[in-house]
Image (tube, rainbow over all chains, first blue to last red; front, side, top):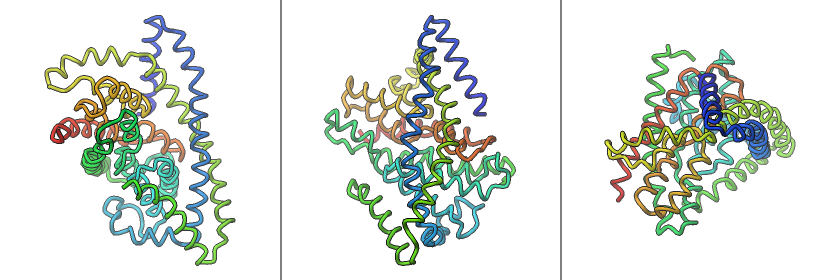
Length: 195
Length: 172
């Protein structure tokens, strides 16, 4: 799937640039994407290490499994395949909380750690499990109480009420979050409901 | 709300450390050994991100999308959908910064409080960069078969845009 998407992005983009005589743009794009990626990864690297360190303390002290047990009844319906008290519940809930508070810098490392612990439950390491896809959908619908970037952009253009945007965003992302969960559940059943 | 947001991380970190000290854990060693996992994780995400950024950049910078939008315009007029929000709606799953740049332009032209700007902001703010999230999360842990993840993600994004078109007018 990703393979087809990737090929079509490159083919459509390149052919269009060549046909409209903008081969030089294509040149710079091909050569600069390495630098862009490295810069992005360099931004993520310290944050990931920092949060992995902090979460390791929570794991070794037993706090994480305690949180996982408390949150289990709530998340069990969404993630029926994860066994009770598994540490991934702790990572998943901290990722969801950080997302809700608009803290992308913390949410991404915590999400990566959650995915990694879901991978330890996965039977086929190269194939996404049902829980992984559900967790991914929770992250792609950007469920968030405070869309910080947009509010600050609105303030920059001296909006009358910059944070007004938060309420419609919250309602709409919550509805699409529910929609995503339902579609995900239906699709996984169609797929055979395998782990 | 802003207060809660800025207090969330400090309180989380404090609770984790105080609980660990109470449980007599060597907090320093625990932190360092956890943080060490960061390097292999970042190493494994680099190559899938590189591939995706390479593809997405060629596509975005080619400008082919503008032709596509012109082509779709008559259909939008027919459906009474403001055509200015189309680029943001379509590009949202592919790139976060692209949408933010478009939003910046719209604020400049229409003002941040106009209906069209609010609609575009809600579309930008109610979703995340689906393609990037899939690449980052699945690439890092080495998943090759993503099954139906992309479809569910994109379908949810489409649903979000439709909901925004229906619900945002109610706020005016």
